[in-house]
Image (cartoon, rainbow, N blue to C red; front, side, top):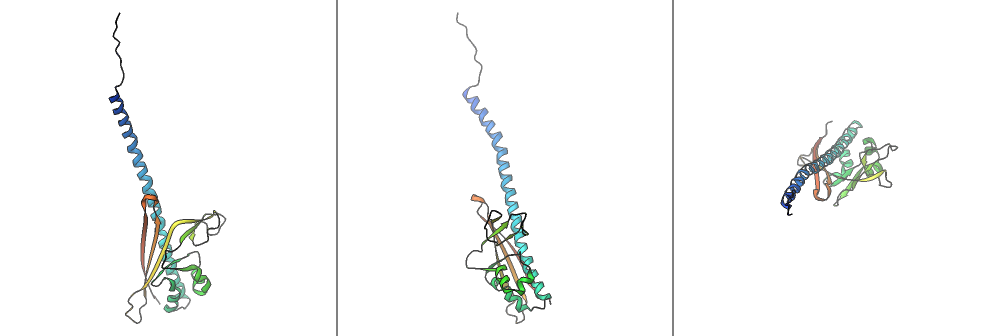
Length: 199
C-alpha cells in the first residue's frame, strides 16, 4: 500500500523572505531610535557649550562694569583683560569680578593665558556638599567629585578702531570646543560680544 502523504511546510525561499521582512521591520525602528539618541546627545552638548560661552561673556562684561563702578579706568580694564588681548585665554567664572580687579593673585587664577596651545579642559564639580556643585571651572581634578569635562573654552579679546587715539571698544570672542564621540569629531560654537567704555 503506497499512500502519498502531503507535506506542508515552508520552502527555504519562503523562510528567507520571512526572515528578511522580519529583519527590515526590526532594523528600521532601531535605526530611528539610534539617530534620536545621537541627535539628543548632540543637542545637549551644544546647549551646554552655548551656556559655557555665554557664562564667559557675562563674566568678562561684569568685570568691565565692576571696574567702572569702582572708579577704574579703561586702561585698568585693559590690564585686567591682558592675557586675552590678541591671544587665547580662559576664565574661571567661580571668582568674583571685584576680586579679579583688586587682587592680582586672584586675577592670575581667574584669567589664564593659554599661550599658543589649546586652553585646558574645564572640570566639573559633582559633589552636593561642595559650594560649587554643578559648576564648570579649572579646579584640579583630585577626586571623583571633580571630574574633567569634554569642553574647553578659548577667549580672544581684540581692540577695535585702533586707528582712533581714544578707541574704547573691544571685541570678545568665546569659542567652546568639545568632541562628539568617536565618529562625531570636534565641534565648536562661537559667540561674539562688543564691549564699550560706557562711562
